[in-house]
Image (cartoon, rainbow, N blue to C red):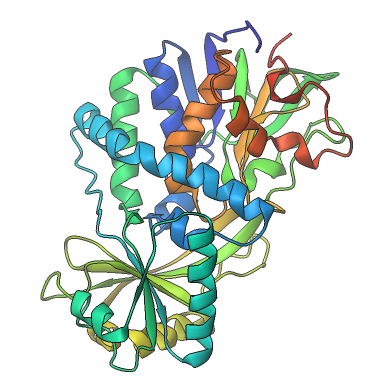
Length: 393
């Protein structure tokens, strides 16, 4: 690993990934500045449901197993991370360790759930098959028409908005410079070496190292040399926030089904999501998207239609071609990526910070994990030398 250890770190993006890294980097003694194009946590992270669900999210194929490895590792970090952040910020995150139910509403979905069960068991994951009656004992509000359920007891959830409030407070207390409405227009390079960031309005910002953690906007910056960018794209998601005026009780666990999920909060609020739409940066909510979410949820959780609608949100997930994040060095010295987390940005925030600091500080402890999410896997010609290439001259 490189012996270079930056003193001044600039992070582009003030969502969960950027703020977690900023807090952790400041704890390690770095001078840290966060540049956020809008308001801190006001984009993708604010809209997220907050599922910490590597078991429920795992997909078939080699890329799916790479994502699972990262997710399992980060999920294990979450209890200690939440406790430490609560102590540092005074904000209780409300980590809900109640597990997740995966539901089937008809025979076709039940057969698919059986296939999913076998797949997870082959990976050694903790998942249990539940008959409909057993699932309804756990969650009485589920519909009698339920055909089958799987329980993933180690998948949990957290409220991203509370997380963001805690991170902002912890960053400010630690001395992180947080700059809102500081939009980066371009990256200034000299050959393959980073020189500065050019902000809208003409200001130039410099640092020993720069981490691009701007979610789906990470790939929109001008100035990168040819072939030095990453293939991050926006994936639109519509999400509905609901409230039970009588308080909590409809659900305790997260429930997932074909087409969506419902995530309960401790105060009687629920998050219903989410559409998956390849619409570029189009942010409009649609009646059709909301209708489909409510229709599918109602079939398995009839009581959801008695809840009050508090908010309809639209977010843009940062997708990568293989749905595995891009965390690590770029082809430009001094420039690193922390993007492409797709549906798992909240889950992967603690691990992403660890991986970035391992790389920045030359610790060498996380080489295998960094190889799994090396951004240069998409380069036309993979840069030789692996993830250990220097991030500075």
